[in-house]
Each structure stands twice: as structure tokens, then as C-alpha cells.
Length: 547
Image 1 (cartoon, one colour):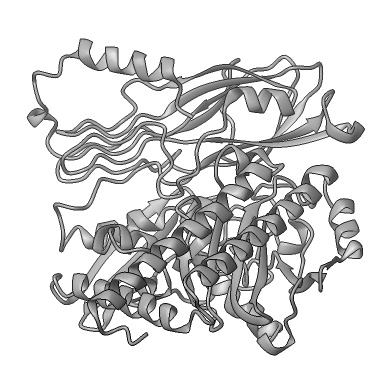
Image 2 (cartoon, one colour):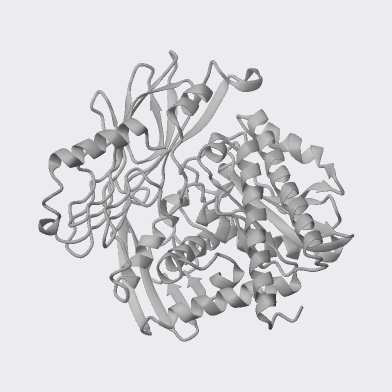
């Protein structure tokens, strides 16, 4: 196959699309078999196929940028620790190392070599978030990574098809949810197995002995397409900064974005130094969300793979909040890392103003609770659950922002019924916050208001890691800021946005998630859209649910 004729090009495109279908089935397997609700209900995962060089050829549509784009680099680390010539059919490799995985210990990364006719032809990798992996729990209170849970270096989970029972016993013994955590490990392994099976079927169908030619085509075509899009933008250096809450004081995220003929680079020199607490971001996660933000504006129609990511380079000073080295505490790195697309958008707005939205709530508002339970699996007396909630996105140059929608993570909200079935909590209220989106010609998306209480006569703990409480999502082009979020008790006490806090039995927790910023002059908003129309739309959306 020369790759020069029109028929060869069509054949390549068909196989490329087939690869995307393979990895999407891989991801759907993980969703169907996962034990943690944040995976099976919310889609907090990633899945992809890689060539023998460790280049990501295709990623599943289902999944988060933070997982996918950092997992793309983690496969290189697996190959470095387990050279290709040592890999055998039935091997599975595992880690949750934040600096070689996807940024914190709760994300387990599994990589599985795929063999066809006795030859290693590809690697499948996947990631999912485990709700509890021991330590002080999924919150920002730790002061080093070893406080945050079990730390798994690069290890073999299985060797020639035989599972590492010692490792599994260690996982079970270091979590408040041994059944769920072990089950999630097996779901990750099954996910990669399905990918291997479907890839071999594809290679047999297309009579392929190797993916090398297809891999080169994918990476070269994708890179060339992104470079062509970058060439439409004026060369130069563009700067932006954003102030956010931080843990115990505000932090500044400072970016200089350079466009030239070779690509786009983002340098975070000037960003605040790392924190003592677990809001620090490993460099791989910084790169992941920065690259995603660039791709959303510069090359949104080009599939995500090693080729399309290669024109983007990201740097941050070591020791800054965006490049925190081992052994920094990093458990809630998403609170800061998910702000980075908005930081990048502030730079790109100067060269592509018609494409860039206002700032949004950005980071997820994950409600992590733990305590005693009357409904634990395997006679467990403890529970730990993460209820995913979201604020509003920024208004777009020609549309309102999306309400209660996760951007940039894409992780969906957890249905109330699921939370109440796996943990002793009652959600008395979950609805949109009227007028929480920033006014503008196009309004920012709305946040939510939730009220939650213990379902049994027991206190429980909330491991808070929220932002946009003191520093709202900013409007753009004359649009106004979105409303801040907040954490309260129904009795009136205001709670901290970060840190573990006890909610006493009988007390009701109130959560306000932030609204997105508005876009354009509010006076230019369509006068035909009456308040009654907006309220009707709000009522319809609330009745239909936002999960």
C-alpha cells in the first residue's frame, strides 16, 4: 500500500474511523463495568490506542481532556519501564503515579500490549477515577502526596494472564471501599481487553500485519492540518492572567502565548508558586488542559491524537503551582488545572475574538462526602462518595452559555438517585440558580443550588475543593461577570471553599455553584426574549433535570 493513490487515501480514512470506533467501544466497556459512580454515571475516564512508539492514534469520544491528554504521555513512561521486547501476551501494566499518570493518585492508568499473530502491534491504555484510595481522602488537605492515598509505581498488574494477587490485596487494604476499588481495577483491565480484541478483528479484516503505515498517516495528516490552521493566525506573543481563589489565599495564573510558523507555545512564567496543600498541578495535567484549550479554538474539527497535539508546547517554571514536582500534594489538581483553557482563551481572544467565549465556572464542583453508613456493600460500615456538580459555562460570541454543564472536563453531573442509593444522604433540592449567569448580549450559563442532609442520625464529612467563590468568571466584550459560588449551612453559617468540614446530623448543607460570564453589552440583548420566556425555559430545563 503506497498511500499515494486516491483509493489508498480512502482506505486510510476508513481504517482511521474504524480505530475511533474501536476505542469508543473500549470506553463504553469501562462505563458499563465500572463500580465508581463518577465513572459509570459521569464519564470520568479516558481510553485510547497507541502505536509501538507510544504515539496516541485515536482517543475515545467519551472521556475527559485531563485524562486523555496526560495519558497520552503516560504510555511513553510505560514503554520506558517495560521495553517492548519484554512484553508478553496477557501482560497488563498499572500505575497511579501523578507525574507519570494523569495527575493524582485517584486515577489508575492501565496499559495493555496488543498482539496479532504473535507480534506486538499496539498498546491500549485507559484511565478512570476511583472514589477512594485511602489516605486522608479526596480533598486538598494533604501536605505531601503520600498523605493522599496508596501510591502505585509502574508495576505489572498481570503477567501472561495471571493477575498480581499481592497488588490487588494491597489495593483492597488501602481503601474505605475495597469491593468497589478492586472492581474498578478489573473494569479497567476489561476495557483494554475489548480494545485488543476489536483491533485484531480490524487488522484481520483489512489484512494488516502492522499499524505502522496507518500510524504515520494519522500523525502526519493531523499535524499538517493543525499547522495549516495555526498559519491563519497572526504571529506574535499574547498575554493573559487570571486570579483565582487558591487554598488559603488568591493565586495568579499568568500565560504568554506565542504563535509562529512552527506552532503555538504557552509559557506560564509569572504564575504563583506551588501551595503547601493539595491544589498543586503536575506538569502533565497542565499540558493536557492547555492543549485542549488551544485545540478548541485553533483546530476544533481535527481529531485528537499525537499528531494534532504535537504543534502545541507548554512550559511552566518548576516549583510553580502549574509544575509542582514530587512529593507535592496534588489530590485536587483539577481545581486549578481546569481553569487553564480560560487562561488560554484570554490570549487567543486577541487574535480570534469571534471564536472565544467568556470565562465559565470551569472547574468541577465535586461534592465528596464520607462517614458511617447503613447501606455499604460487603457489610462495610463506611461510605465515600463523590457527587459531581457543575456551574455555568461562559457565554459564546453568538449564544448563551450552557447551564450546569462541565467545561472543560465534560464530566456529567451525578444523578440524585444514584447518590442516595450508594450513600446515606438526601438531596432535598437540586435546581438552577436564577440570574447566576453574567448579563450580556448573550448570558452566561446558570449555576445550581443544592441542599443536602444526612439520611441517618450520623454526622458526615465534606472534603471541599471549590473555586470561583471569591473570584468570579469574568465577562467578555462588555459582558458582566457571573455570580460567585458559595458553601453554607441552612442555619446560616458560611463554610470554607476548601478543606475537610463536618456536617452535623440534622444540619442541611447548601451549595451554590458559580455562573458563567456574559458576552457583549447587556443592552444589546434581544428585547423580544421576555422575562416570561426565560422563566418558562428555566422551568422546563429544571423539570427535565440537568444530569
